[in-house]
Length: 242
Image (cartoon, rainbow, N blue to C red):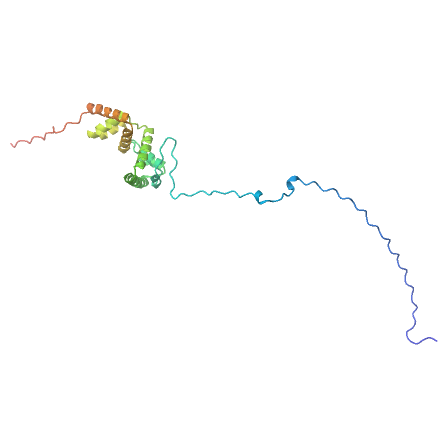
């Protein structure tokens, strides 16, 4: 007699299980290539404080409190420090002054060639003259001497050169009141006179032989050019009343 409850279900047979895969043996190990040789330079060296490289000391340029004037050319004395106070470099200022002093020079054209005009030059000249005079009054006059040296050198380079006889003529002409005529005959400008005289005096003070030569030339010129007669002027006679 069948039992009451769920109907009986005949169990199906389980499918046959797949066979387990066969175990694969691990691959044989491949030998690694030998390591490359390490260069000797890459081998670390034990560090020692004695081997430490000290940093190089960098010397910074020092800035002087007062700038120095440019170095003079070989054979020329150094320029005084007061030259830095001039509105133009001393060499340029003295050279321009010598150029425009020529009796036949066009001053305007010459100044424009140097990037100046007569108004600017007048201010530069006034300021420079004051600085040179102040330096001459409180120092040894080195600035004035340097100005004269550059001025005369530029003047002579332009063809206005005066020898010992020319200096003697200037001296006698100044004493006789004929200086303007003498300057014209020598092709000089009136501004040339003072730098020439100062340079002449310095040379004569340092060179006794030159001083003797100058005195002899002056005596010869004085004998050849007597002073003008004075005291011979007679006033015109008055007409008699008729």
